[in-house]
Image (tube, rainbow, N blue to C red; front, side, top):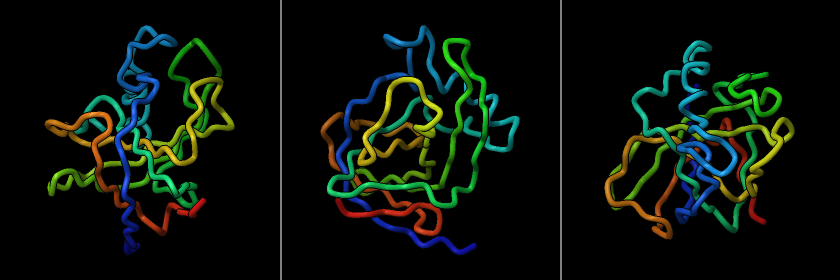
Length: 151
C-alpha cells in the first residue's frame, strides 16, 4: 500500500499523563503495561519514548478509517474493562527534524475515563530533545488510514 501523507500543523498540549504515568488514575504508566501486549500481537514499540505526544490539530479532527493495526479487548489493567486500540504510522516534524512514529488511538467507545478531544491526536515517537508544551510542530498522517476533516 502506498502511503499518502497528510501534513497537519499542531501544538503540543498537556495530556492526562496516563501513557507515561504514574498519574492520578493509574499508579503506573499505561504504555509500560500495554507495550508487551501490543508486541505479542505484532507491534513492537520498544524503540519509542514511553509516552505520547498530545498534538492539538485544530481546526481539524481525525478519524481512524483503516489503521495498520487494531487490537481488540486489550486487558492491560485491572482497574477497568479491556479496551480496543488502533495504530497508524505517522511522522512528527519538530524544528526541521523528522521522527517516525505511530498515531496511538484508544477507541473511545471502549474507554472508561480520560477521553480525548477529536482534535487531539496522540502520537508515539522517539525522544524529541527540547520539545515543550505549547511548541508548534507538524505531524504527517497516512491519508489511506486516517480521515482528516476541518471543523
